[in-house]
Length: 67
Image (tube, rainbow, N blue to C red; front, side):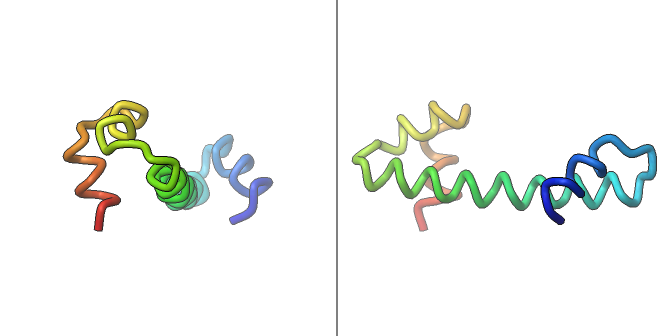
């Protein structure tokens, strides 16, 4: 789903289209989060800093992204 389709999917009243857009947005958010966590770790950020930035505990951030 491209950005135009996402925009349409978000604004639709068709649940089939809208729910596909929700799933696509979740996948995109997960990809962006993983990329930014990796960048933060390369920059020397602690798991506490990453967790704070994501609004979760350091343990949750490490569990999800620490391997």
